[in-house]
Image 1 (tube, rainbow, N blue to C red):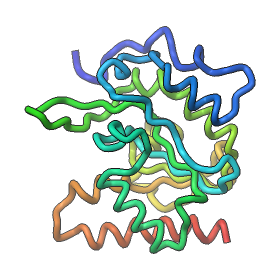
Image 2 (spheres, rainbow, N blue to C red):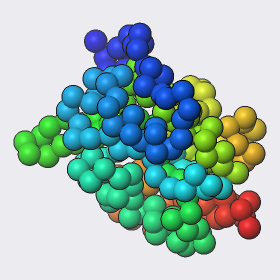
Image 3 (spheres, one colour):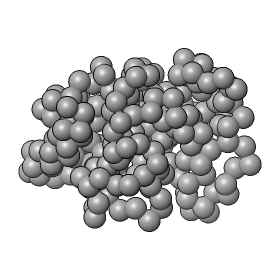
Image 4 (cartoon, rainbow, N blue to C red):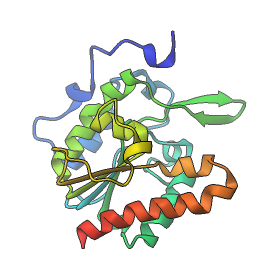
Length: 213
C-alpha cells in the first residue's frame, strides 16, 4: 500500500477539541492527541505558537527533528531560514502565529538519523481540526501557506504553489491568503540557487508585510 493510500480515519482530532476552545486549552488537549498513528513515535505534539491577536499566520507542513525534540515550531534549519526571511521582509516573528498542518513529526530512521517524511492525506485529515480551530481563534488578517502540503490542505488538492505562489487567493480563511514555498525547499535545492530562492521568499513575505502596514 502506498504511503498516501491509507484509508481516511474514522477518528479525527475533532473529538479532542474542547467545547469552549482557547489557544491554551487547544495546546493542552493537543498534547494528548492520538487521532492518527504519528503520536506513537513522535517525542511530543508540536502545537502552533504566537499571540492570539496575531494579524499574520504562517502555516507549514509538519514538525522536523529539532521541532519534535524541543516542542516548538520552526526552530530547526528551516526555521532559521524563515527567521531570516521574516526579518528581511520587515516582519516580527514574535507578533506572528506560526503552526503546521500536522502536529506530530513524521520520519523514517536511517541509523541514528530521523529523516522527515511527508504526511499522507489520512494524517492530514485527522489533524486538520486543530488547524481549523487555530485559524478560527486567531482570525488573522493575512494567512500564508508555506509549501504545497499546507496550501493543498487549506486551498484544495488541486492547488499548485508553482503556479500561484505570491498571489492573493480569495478564501474564507482570512481577508488575504497567499501561498509560497516552504523554507525547507530552499535548503533541499541546489546550493547555487539558495540565495536567489531566499530572495524570492523574502519578496513574497514583503507582500504580506505590505498588507499589515
